[in-house]
Image (cartoon, rainbow, N blue to C red; front, side):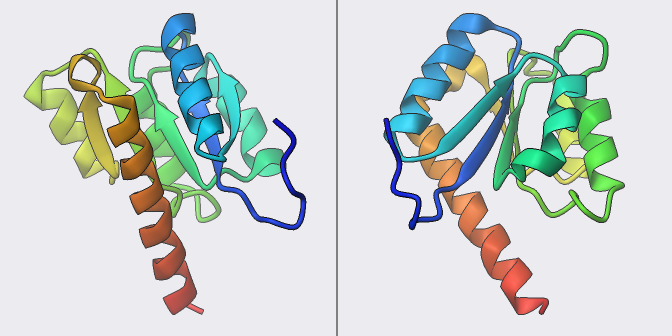
Length: 139
């Protein structure tokens, strides 16, 4: 779909190594007028941060090489990226992982078996709006 260049569309960085899940999320977010970049690892995500400048990140926890919590910790330690809302989507429903994610300031933690794609779009949009508002009040 061609996007009107005069409109600022939200940018979503989707870090998910499951092809079926990433394709489904990509389709639903693009239909909601998001610009989406899909990567399969934290390393690929890090490489895209500066050139893409995501409005939000959807992050799986189980990834090749580096897990999602380690990547989230790195984001939160960076002045440049700590403000980006990160929504965790994972098959891991253990309280320990959920607690760690929230301690690292994850915006949401969603267990994939409970995932509704339309709800996910709403949650991501909400967190982008909250982040944008918070950033504008800091100026």
